[in-house]
Image (cartoon, rainbow, N blue to C red):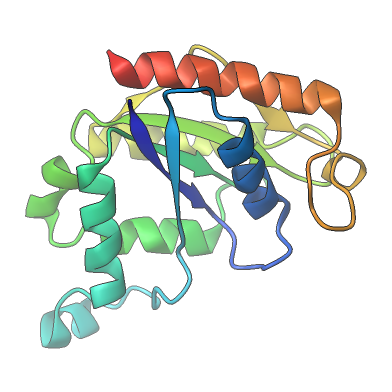
Length: 183
């Protein structure tokens, strides 16, 4: 059974992307386990801090979780038509030291979805991740796409995904990711 680490790229507790990741855990097909991780507590990257103190333990633990998993599912917000700074910052730490990149990311299957209250879903953010994925040497899943727009109408007050069309698209995406990760 493939297992993927699910990572939401927002620090907000009431984030639609955290809610989308939660929905993914509930709608994952049999045979796919999603281990929800967090970027909470990762400090701003500072090379001087790294040189003085090394990689923070919160980052080392996340690196180990990703390295043990069969894949990674990134649930990305879109800020100013690009990737969120906090998620990019976490990724910058996750690539330290550079010799760890192959262990953590090398040829790892990666899925990418996202939600936004605005129009267009997270198309620009998802496109902005592609050069980063190429640099890391991951294997992006392109079999399906999932850009969730108008999120405020798709989740209830408790941030449960209630839109059946989006739930079905998420199920289909996850089924494809499971098959891709199993290869």
